[in-house]
Image 1 (spheres, helix red, strand yellow):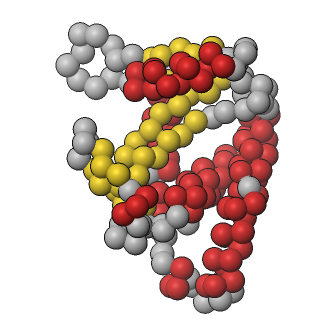
Image 2 (cartoon, one colour):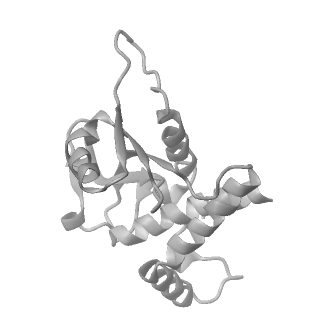
Length: 184
């Protein structure tokens, strides 16, 4: 996962690439990867002596360049960062969620969403005033760290997938592998 390779170039110790891809596609479509990710997340939090189910979430995004294998119909252009690709959003969310921290870019639509959800409060974390250099605002470092961890995986730095759901699955695999390392 970390170095990434095209499906057809999987090492010989794996089953035929079509079989591996079939399972990958099926697990992504059926939500198996989401369930695995959630279960591991609960175990990691419990191991750290924290409540297994988070009560807050932090949401952020980054632009990921798309390779020519990603269809133009599923790509966009981030004019601010001059990136032709897809938006990669990350959030820790759970049904018991009570608080969401978000960057200023999420203020409008997310505020409307949280007003419709009873018991969920939104706190917009804005840039620190008077700073000439980049400083991670309070609470934002958690999501910035998570984005940095996924950036260590080749298939997450650039979007090689034809389907956005498959890129999401690659990000889930990356964060799952990180959680497995924390458990061992």
